[in-house]
Image 1 (cartoon, rainbow, N blue to C red):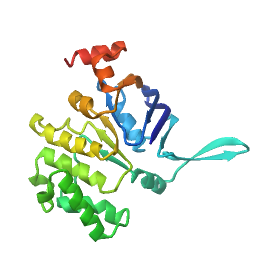
Image 2: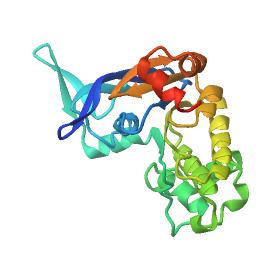
Image 3: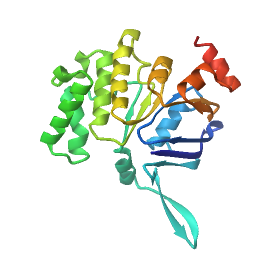
Length: 254
């Protein structure tokens, strides 16, 4: 589902991604862990083409993200996609951020149907039916007519998950979705994410919740200095890491 090859990204003199490569299979959940500033969030933003990169490639479901490949005189040539073409690609990649980014002037239901109706052209009745199913899945069926300001942080984040799913993405990206929540609200969001994983959704999750990574991830990837330095099953990476940086990072969490 996801193929990342030798990705490089710099901000001025800061080389954030340094030749990072990663594959994610269809239906797999991969959790990215590592210290702040290691490049995890930048990687997610590149997958969704919210950031451009300097070298390397990303493909989702076989399609190059941000570019079209062709040949000129037998030599492969990449041409950057136009903004509307990038938006079409992005519609198949759902993303949930640290902060909820809900439209405050719209009800929960209106937040969910806005993009399907006005971006994807889905008939409103169909969009509402899908939204009702998604709200039930995240345990918020009774909040359809509520405004975001009337919801707790955990409820708003679950609405954000449902809103991303309303576009029927092939891939879901989560950028530390519980980091802005009070501890007592984290559990309800992680539960919704576990339910989503059980449906077979392909997910890449940046998280500091090691219990979630252990229970849900097919693989855990430790990111350090803009590279994936260790990747494998949760029990291997979390319990018996071999890379010194992974050992040092995880020892501080025990």
